Length: 101
Image (cartoon, rainbow, N blue to C red; front, side, top):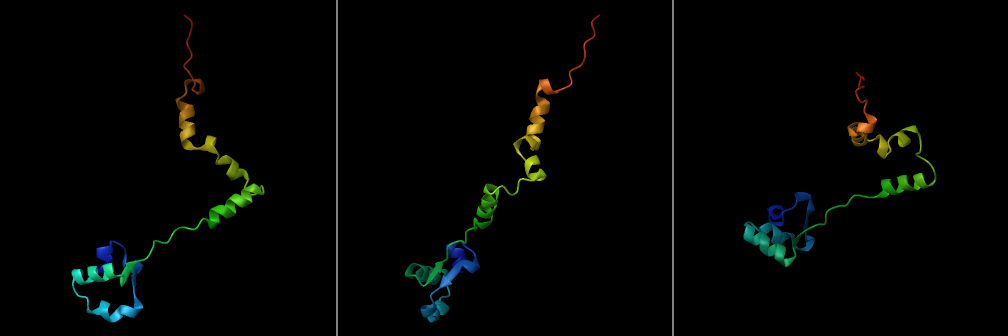
């Protein structure tokens, strides 16, 4: 019930261990709201995503690693959108030959 009032998941609810008896007696949403305002029930902060993998990869690239064939092939020019842009450009298309008559 506290999770729905605080609009978070059940695992993010924190209950004060010193006030467990008071929390157990709460039956209605109003009782829960009073406990929330009193600080007996609270929601924990969302857990963030670590940047450890990104930092490790950037450090490896600074050292010159991760520069193999696939890494070079996956550059901006190799993206599918760039290829379609190249195909739309008339200088890259095979233009029909005109016959002089």
